[in-house]
Image (tube, rainbow, N blue to C red; front, side, top):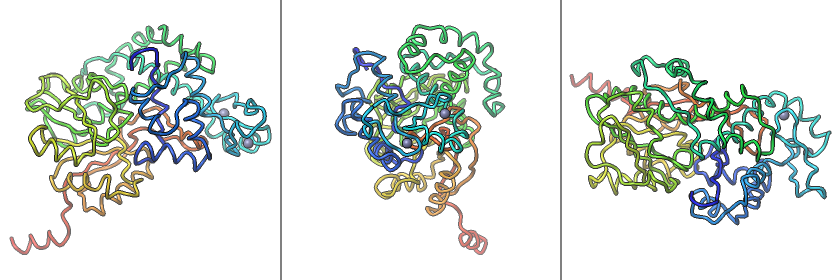
Amino acid sequence: MAGPVPALPGSFNPSADSVYSDQFGFYTMDYKVPGLSKVILDKLNMKDYKEYREALEGKGKVGFRSHKEMFQKLEETFKFCARCSKLPSDFADPKALKRCIKCLNVYYCSKECQKTDWSLHKKFCKMLHKVSIDRLVEWLIHTGDLPFPTEAWSRPAKDVRCWNDWLSMQGDLMGRLEPILSGQNMTDLWTNSCRPRPDEAELQKSVWRVCSEFFSRSLTIGLGIQMSRLDPYSRPLTVHLVGAGHNETLGARTTDLDELSHMFPGHQGLEVVMVGPEVVQGPIMRPPLRAFGPRGRVYISAYKGLYHEFWEEKVEKGEAAKPDLVVGFHPGFHASQGLGEGWLPTLLLLRDFNIPALFTVFNDEELQYSLQILLELEMDIKDSGPNPFSSQKPEQVQSSPNHSPSHCSAFYIYFQGLQETQTEQEETNTHS
Ligand SMILES: [Zn+2]
Ligand SMILES: [Zn+2]
């Protein structure tokens, strides 16, 4: 975003834990805290979700006079009683809501509400403390201070099985974090935000958690490449990222997935096309490649629309390469009531073209539900489980803070094509 308008922190995305579309998630907040979506729009001087989205896409005219004002307004969107859901507008004194002094994240309208809530809140207070630091530190992704620079991999991808393996290749990480921690943007952040600067150890951990979410995307795509036994050293590969939205495309840079080149050094060229109706305008919004990508580099492009439309308009006409792998970060098809209009054509397309696909979900419940839907579609589910490269940043449901946190891409499902049914097998046996 150009000009004096500061970018909105990514954590302000209306990412409820189970959303089919961002808009759906935005308004589901109102079930828990009636009026919360309106508070958010009011704070940002917007009239509806459409305007909010345009602002995120850099088209709107939303503006804050200063970073302080921006952080303040964002903090105000968390102001409702965690116990009785009352909003500041319910009180004569708008300062009636007081913040929990331990986490500086949840608010209460009275001592009684705080006392009654404590037996529940005490289980989440520590986690919510982290969450509230992370959502500010995330702003440094938008300023370009984060992610921190990474090292070339000293081990083959197959031997890097978890975050600890990855971290062990990063050498002196603290040395690289130092300039970020002592940087001007970090200082500005804590001068302007509504809470004191955490101590350095806490800040380091937060920087790591925020960056883990960023790197998790490259590493999860890499995991999919390995699971489908694709060899990026023998030929260029095309990966389609379906259901891409704010998280992957707001403020996205063409270098965002470069970790894949550290993972497969000297590969033949990796192309990632981000496809989704909520793709945000930016430098990655460029046509997909028709010929082979640049060797040893990752080329990102994007298409705003549903995947089956992209397929008809681009892939079938030969204007985009067929995918070797399709990846979806929290596609959320399990939460979609209108599955037919949204995800069903995409899922059937993946199945009928026998394309290897790796989808991630936020938690075990979503995993079970998603598996059930895929089974109903007779997908051949080859593997599923906890993602070793899950984001380490806890996510709070904004309207309902006292819950176990979710993590981006916490679980994965790997599937390809149509499952062989018992009858087909029997038939094959009879024929042979
Ligand atoms: Zn209350
Ligand atoms: Zn607390």
